[in-house]
Length: 145
Image (cartoon, rainbow, N blue to C red; front, side, top):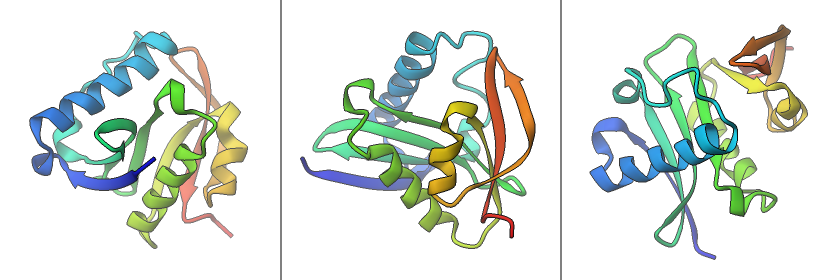
């Protein structure tokens, strides 16, 4: 296994890289999780940095980071279904944390992943809420004291 993580602005992505990240997100969110009420690809793509986790030439994980928002918004965290349980998501989110540094950020985590995000340095804020029938929690970076 030869893992490599890159974080690229939209205009730095090669067409093939963008295709692979959209294909992975579609498999995770649309096919696997059956999220069809919101567009997986939206107007925010060109405004984002995209984390790409590669195992050789295969994209195994991706995350979208909306750096032009205040606070920055992290979302679309996806790991290939066949590669879950290997710690890839944690490695991706650690790279996101390094990329963010001290800059404030927010993410809307699926509620069942709250403890995992907390272990990675995110802090819950507020009550649970629904997005397309899935229970979510708002989490912030850096954690509030």
